[in-house]
Length: 148
Image (cartoon, rainbow, N blue to C red; front, top):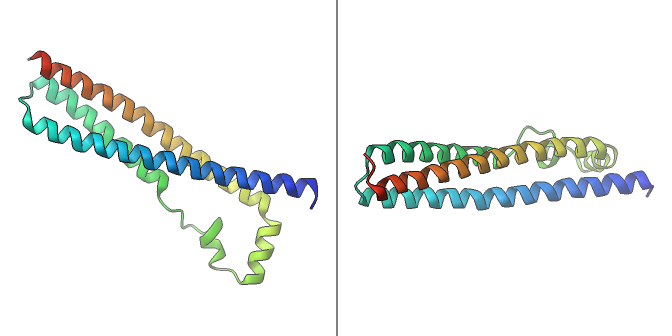
C-alpha cells in the first residue's frame, strides 16, 4: 500500500469518525431540546403567565422547535446514492470492490461535504437552543417578577 493510499484510507476513516461524532452530538442535543420543550410546557400550564412572559416564552419555544428541525435535518438519511450504502446496494460484488479502491478520494470528498453540512446544522441548532433557552429564562424572570 502506497503512502497516498494510506493517507486516503486515514482521511476516509477520519471523516467517517467525524460524521459519527456529529451524529452523536446531534442526538444528545435533540434529546435535550425535547426535554426542555416538554418541561417548559409542563411548567407553563401550572403558572399564571404575564403577557411579556408569554411573548418572550413563545419566541423561545419557536427557536427551540427550529433547533429541533435543524437537528432532524442533520440526521436525515442521505438516500441519494452518491456515497456508501445506497450506492453499494446498486452494485455487484465486483463493482463494489472496484468502487471502493478507485473512488476513495471521491468518497472522502463527498463524505467531507456531508460532514460539513451536518456540522453546520448542528452549529446553527446549538445557537438557536442557546438563544431559545435564554428567552425562556427571561420569560421565567418576567413571571417570577410579575412584570405586566
